Amino acid sequence: MDSPLPLATPTLQALSVARWKGSYAPSEDQVAEETPIGIEYNGVPHVVMLATPSDLADFALGFSLTEGIISSASDIQDIALEEYSAGIRVQLTIDEGLFSRLDLKRQNLAGRTGCGLCGTERLAQVFRPMRDVTSSQTLSVKALHAALTDLPQHQTLQQATGATHAAFWLDADGRIVAAREDVGRHNALDKLIGALALKQTDFTQGALLITSRASYEMVQKSIQMGIGILVAISAPTALAVRMAEQFNLTLVGFARNGHHVAYAHPERLTDF
Image 1 (spheres, rainbow, N blue to C red):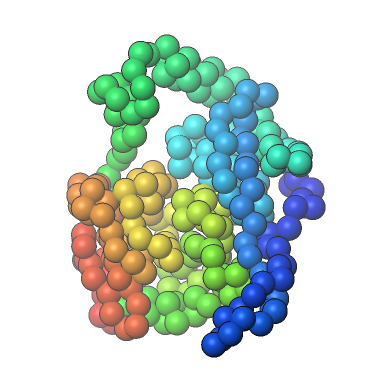
Image 2: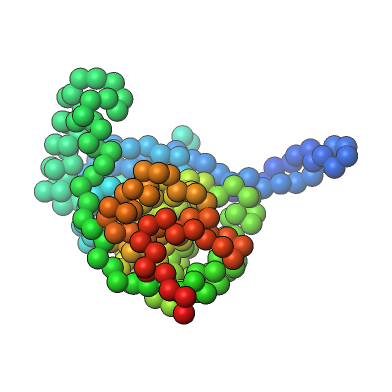
């Protein structure tokens, strides 16, 4: 699979603004771009999402993995990006067998009556079948908080705009070895997972750190990839905690300023 060519769409925009400091004065500012990104498989549109227009091949691959459309990066035969005035199209080519299953699932959803997420069949689509996390990876509290201290130097877009989330991968020693940013927290995580999958990373050997709350979607994506430790700098939801407890994921919230709260399976966090 060849890497797509770089996009011309910028990730941030410079603006002239009126800044208030006791009175208004002209000033310059930078804001993060948010662009419609259409993902399609074998020429058939699948979803349109708003995202920061960077690392979109990583994004599409990570999305495909965490949504269970594919099981490994090798299932993607080709990725192509096309820019339009209205947004960017990411075209993925996958095995016909995988596409047939995806197409059948799409037809079944479209053929049901009802509106939105109503009915037990549609609700079942929200919670995908998952297996217990088997990772034996541990993380020391000291390494965790050292990584938290290092976060700003890996968030160039956040430093420029103050508008983006980030997802970070910590190696077995707790060092930040990969990072991705996006205006959406789910997008940042999918971008990171895609980038790691391309490098054939063993997701059981490391930990995930996110600069957002830990919603059930973030927990579900982590479990889907077999990740053993998910650390968020903000709060989890009750559903996220129940899911983490059920599927053996270590879930940590409010990790900041030398403190954290372990909500599920704290045994992977060590004090040495």
